[in-house]
Each structure stands twice: as structure tokens, then as C-alpha cells.
Length: 102
Image (tube, helix red, strand yellow):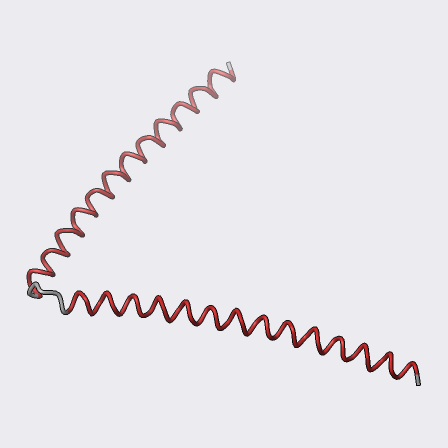
């Protein structure tokens, strides 16, 4: 009789643990869905704001294109500058290694 009670108690504890884990998973899933829905709403809101902006579509597209081109140019310049720094540092490290070997 006592062994059966202990066995049922053990099973009940396992079920409770699994139920707790399931509740936790569902909570985080709900949280992820809410965050995703919020971000999706932000994206759609931004798109609608661009579509219904007071500027004409042609002006807006031209402004977006010019801004994108300027940002692209700045990014390329920064990329080249950082690449040059990396090459200089590699050259310096190679020369230091050659001097250390001599």
C-alpha cells in the first residue's frame, strides 16, 4: 500500500514538473509572439508612413535614393579606411616577426 502511494506520488511530482516546464515554454512563446507582432506593426507603420507622406512619390523616392547613395558612399569610404588600417597592421606585424626571427 505504501509503495503504491510512493509510486503515485513520484508520478504526480513528475507530471507537475513537466506541467511547470510546459507553462514556462508557453509563457516565453507568448512573449516571443508579442515582440514579433510589435516589430511587424512597426515595419508596417513605417511603410504606411512613407506611402502617405506629404511629398509626392517621385520626390520621396528621389530623396530615399540620394540618402541611400550618400550612406553607401560613406560606408565604402569607411570600409576602405579600415581595410587600409588592417593592411598596415599586418605589414607591421610581419616586419616585427621578421625582426624577431633575426
